[in-house]
Length: 288
Image 1 (cartoon, rainbow, N blue to C red):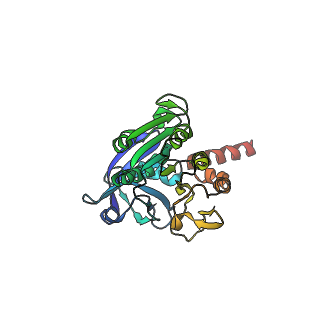
Image 2: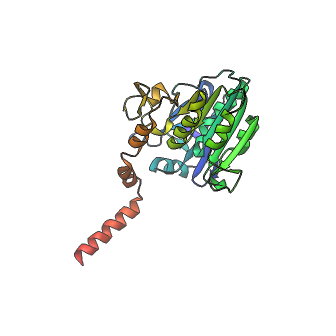
Image 3: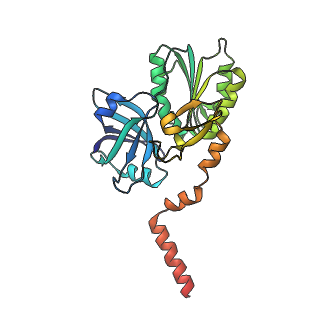
């Protein structure tokens, strides 16, 4: 078991926890993730990217949004509580080298997995321009941390409540027009955002890496649920990725598959009290 040693609320429904995990902290590399399971016997397995780690102190940082049953249960844990099952590091690490100028683009909760990648790219000698975006100011996360890493930080909000009123693709296009052009773009966020980031960079021929962690389920390659089409090949995100060439990913197919079980997921994550109340009301209506 791994003890929670720190917990913060970053924005509405988004939590940051530091978990005691010395072996994972020593071995992890940027881009890798862990599998979290709260109930060892029956619980759902969820993949969470390692947002930061300290090998000397022996902790890893996880950032997650409480949207489903398991993440809501995880959000209820406090400092001193234990995560029953934590497996990792998993996945292929990010390829890090000196590309010259690198553009790191993060949307919403995607800023969390982007953080260690941007940090490593900066340490490798790159000039790092970071673009982070969210629907509004309240949903922005890790602004100070990304600012500390980046040579230049551009903040965008959809509603203009903070920073620049724009989608992240707007400043990304401007960065691609620089001379010399950036050597790499890393884009992490909602699938639609990553798709349009890849389409923005395509005309400029700028190599673009995306992280498809949102489609992962089992995390070990056994379930096949995270299969995606990359070019002419079928890949499994959890073992072949989670990072791929954004210009080769079939985003339309991926997005369609992500919504395939939306009704069942909503039903599974519904409050049990609401289910019981609805069932009782239906019974009362039938007997009226």
